[in-house]
Image (cartoon, rainbow, N blue to C red; front, side, top):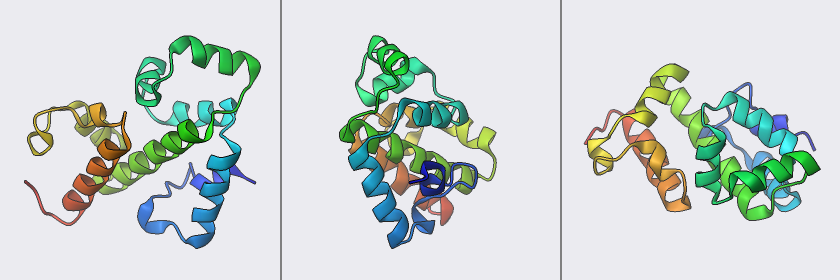
Length: 144
């Protein structure tokens, strides 16, 4: 299976573009686990530090170093979170039109999200869902 095809990392696949084949490919990817090298490819395109990824995935930086050294796969829970973050990030870039604009939005305190920085919500599935919903509202011009 081609992970880049599943995520269309260079093309920016997002929730609205996923068809049933893509969903099954993503499910298979989650079940098989994402290889560290694939994660590194994703991490190179998304401007989060290893420390931030560590917080999002609830893994220590030492564990990341071990995964890298041993070229391990992430388990299904961590793989799913990596994919969810990638999808919401790609959606944000699409909504904002420019990667830099979305990156700035992730860093700025947001009134609609209770005065926190959107990036702080990436550590839970519920937070990722909240960001996805907020991006949909922005996309459709519904601002808080």
